[in-house]
Image (cartoon, rainbow, N blue to C red):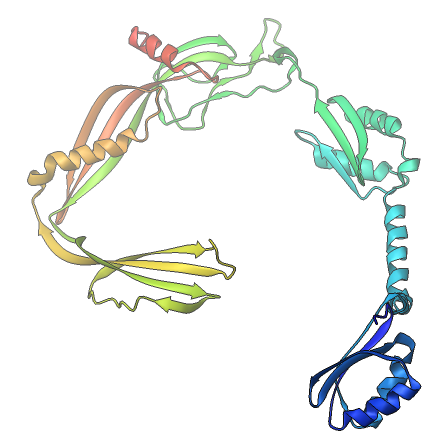
Length: 389
């Protein structure tokens, strides 16, 4: 016979027959199962459990296992957990209430977002969504930030989203215009001024960052006003780089011999090793780590260290033996400093001799077109090749 509501016991001890005979006279016992000579499991009515437990202990038996089950058990457990239930109800109530309050103001803007966010917080009389007039807030933002062409406000969850766009003014209405500046040190070779005030002349030596054309003009009546500077300024630029040859040089190189040391790590500790040890007296090594996650629950890591044997030699050579190689190296370094739009006019180098070394300083002269705008590179090349300077 099975009981829906029960109290289960598994007891251990000797002379159990007499105990069960006496117990069955007072209580209902079911599903008795003799596991061993001194070990038995059985069930009793749920409400008799505490009384029977006392009799088991009074009789000197050991309770190996004890369980309760059924509808009454879960109801009792739920009733004793009223604190948890109350906490859940309270948390749910607080969560529902706080959903109506703004916790964050987020401004979507290209610039000035912090100022707008601060303004919104200062003008919110309440965080309750029901008391926030979005239309009124949009008008207040537009009135206080005149450079905005669009303002919208909306609630997304507990965030107040402010989306704004700045007014785009035509160049003629701008107050300040960036001047045309020199990107390099160089000398001015030709100028074609379109509009603006010229700050340099042909033949002037200029420094990187120096203003070439300003965005302002003075009319015939002596009035000054701003406008977008436009001009074509050609300048010669000198790029230089050095490469040094040493008559006596210590060179370290790899011999070609190598071997791998492999370890498997678990939680940073060595789990496995291939047992190889480094026997090279002079070497370089490279280590890689790879996680062994495929078909593995544990975080194994494969550490592979490759040791390369190296050797050191003293190489002696004269500059004349390496002359072309050193000059070529200096030229390659110099070419790396050039822009694609620069046209090479001249290449030179000088040789500087020292004690035990010789330095080649390579100089490339290029002509650069500066317009202050993004010009097409092919257009720049064509202007120069057509003999404009």
